[in-house]
Image 1 (cartoon, rainbow, N blue to C red):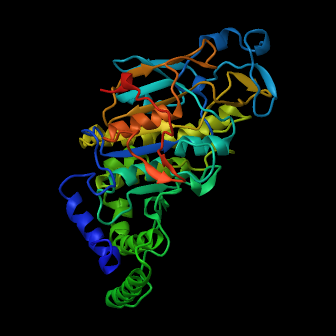
Image 2 (image 1 turned 45 degrees about the vertical axis):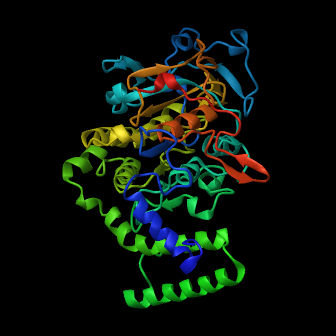
Image 3 (image 1 turned 90 degrees about the vertical axis):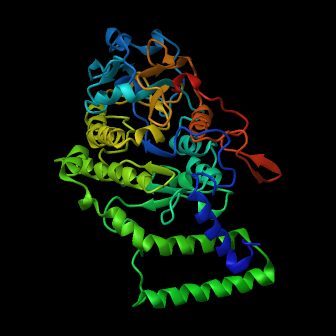
Length: 455
């Protein structure tokens, strides 16, 4: 009855009242079991960072540097088939923290946080090409049009914010291959799609009203409400119309919330300095603003926040050439802000309820492409997770002695999604949506929780 009356606004009001009592009850399913995490911050490293140059050191690459990989191990087909010799990492690795996890010199700041990280060295993907791999990482399917993990999260749990979207993408300048469908709602109602924010200025377009007064704007919205109510009375409830109504009302609420959110000057100087908002490298400043906004968003109840990379290098983390220069620029852009985010969340007591995930769509080859790059490698790569029920100071899985293929603890994208949902209190096998005659889910018919990295 509430969904039908007043163009669905009764249901919106009811949801707002309910979720004040317990986060998650305004979603379709709510919690299946007690949650460890309340929100997710997904640090998307677009292009595929090299595992053997970041979190998976391989002395064999130094020992056999410059030799023909085909004489040492089976070389699979690569994206460009321009295979060079075995390429040792140009960066040194050191052990950090009580856990002694090795991290390369690319990440001196993140290295200080290793005791909070669970490094998964055995990730695999089914796709070696960016667009398909991006869809797969974000939606659990290599084809276009499926709901993203952010959409599935808010579909199941709803938003814990009254005046901000449940799923926000903070765009640092690089929308990934595959486009906005990486953050889309797919066959879920449109109210679950990601809202794309910029990390500066007004964040979103048209955030300021065009009407001369707030009263004039309210009268316009009331008229739209009345027209929508007439449509519902004539044609019945319609998912697209209901989503549009919810989005109109949310946009109205955002006019007050977003300007306050974007006012980073509210933050004390030591926090601004921690993130690097005044860093010398302009792309560090961009990602610093993204990470600080991510903290402010989850503080305000946003359920799922994804950060995309700034345009720090020639082509994302996708270094088919100039590995040293371009991986170096990418790491310089994100290292300090990411460490600051983890530190800031921890100091505020928020890391325990915020799941932070760092991942690209695949890794890179242990041999060169040409002379000074690395090609795509979906057979074994590294990601890490922190906070929100994760057992810090953990290394899970391994690749072979070359860092080429996962040989222990092989972890699929579906396993990552299942684990993320589990920490949010959602059983991935039960969060489904009927579409095309089938109960669809983020993990398709696969997915196992990686329990060894759980606290």
